[in-house]
Every structure is written in C-alpha cells, then in structure tokens.
Image 1 (cartoon, rainbow, N blue to C red):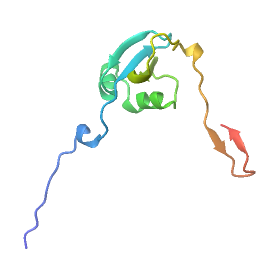
Image 2 (image 1 turned 180 degrees about the vertical axis):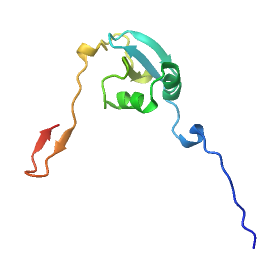
Image 3 (image 1 turned 135 degrees about the vertical axis):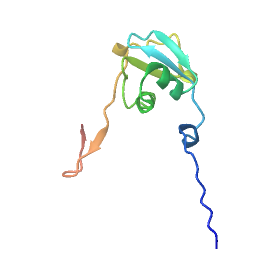
Length: 104
C-alpha cells in the first residue's frame, strides 16, 4: 500500500481568508497621512506590526507608533481626530472575590 505525502507551502496570503479592508492613516494631530488598501500594505509601508494596526481599528488602543487608523468607510474629513478629542475606555474586569465590576 502506497501512501502519498502532500507538501504544501503556507504563505501569509493563504493564511488570511478575510478580504482586505481600506483604511486611513492619521497622525496624532488628526492630519491625514495616507490611505491604504489593506492592513498589510499599511504595515509594510509604515513598519508597524499588523496586530497593532488591527488593535487600533478595533478600539484596543488609541494609537500605535504615532499613528491613528480609521476604516475608510467610517472616515469623515470634517471630524476632529486629534488625540485630545479621543477617549479610551478601559476594559472592565469581573472581580472573582465579591463579583463586583472593577476597572483595571
């Protein structure tokens, strides 16, 4: 009985089944830096980790390496995106002792 062994080459492109999302890059003063076709392209051009950009887009952080990112479909050029006007809501963690909610 002969067994066939299949070798596959896994690349970054084949691991990411999600379609690319267009995003806008802003500096901390809220000024438009550039628009990118995907997180990967922005990551390569700005030398920033893809997960950091994704974290800013998902609201897990305010900025990364001096940049702020917004999905292109939600970007409004008339809105003030400066760091002074953005608020970061910390995650609420459930306490195991008294089952009250406390801020981290």
